[in-house]
Length: 408
Image (cartoon, rainbow, N blue to C red):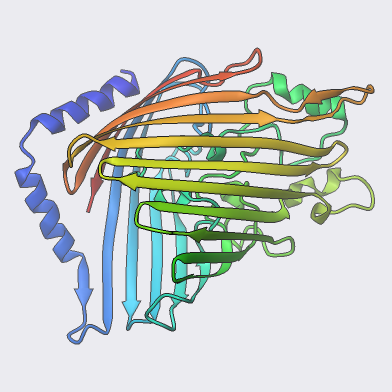
């Protein structure tokens, strides 16, 4: 049976049933998974998300969906939040699934995606120091990327569209690099501009000063790096990435910010293929972004735009511009709908024969979604997306997806 009808049917069955007993059970579970010392000095809480997803695709899976057919994707995420007094905080996120990205590891996987320790010396939040493995400060979407907060099932194009940039080896020639445009996405070796939330390892400093927010980070890998490079034991800090975001909130409705990131994107596997006299530090990714959000009553609007430059061995600078605008409207406290327009454009590089060519295929995608929160612990979403690339190979031109999330 195809994954999409299966999950959709499960969603309808759960929606039709009475949820009062389930809600009572989950509330008792919430109470049982938290602890506080008698005087409140030590507080710890275990929470989680159970996601059941199905994807139905008319072509090869798009973005960071792996495999080559329709798929069923379960996921368990556990979060352990611990406070010691008012100044120390730690977070550990554990996940069991079929890979960080759907079906990246069909046989199943379990790992710690986040672990961090944070020190907040002052109660007003002006300064926070944090170390560990955690999401990048770049951009705004990362702050609402989990399945409970994301109005969609997939990420925006900027955070999941795989380009022909590789971190595994240097292209031998310019024509060879340009020829990748005519191939299906090679997700085991190619990169997006930002790989989802980019749970890379390192340290950050962030805080709030009046209506302004700031965040700076020093990480072991670029924002485009793949999940296998995020842990410090897999990739050290010999070629670090620096990222930052500055934002302003003039009032309760508006927030706008700018982000920047700069660092090497090639992995050690590429060393043997680099031109003589050059190292991985010679080839960097530089990304600049801006974001804007607005909310009023039932309306929420988010938008982001990014310009990224990859310094590609034997090719030169490969530039791309990507942006999206997302709108969500709540018809009732439980029912919402959302639409998102995404686009990515690619600049030209020399073709080795005296001319220039676009180094990848321009693409646009429209995402639509509807969601319903049956209770404070249960949410369902349906998504339809249509995408089109300016080339002969289409990567998931139409996508149907369903997601059921239980939060505890």
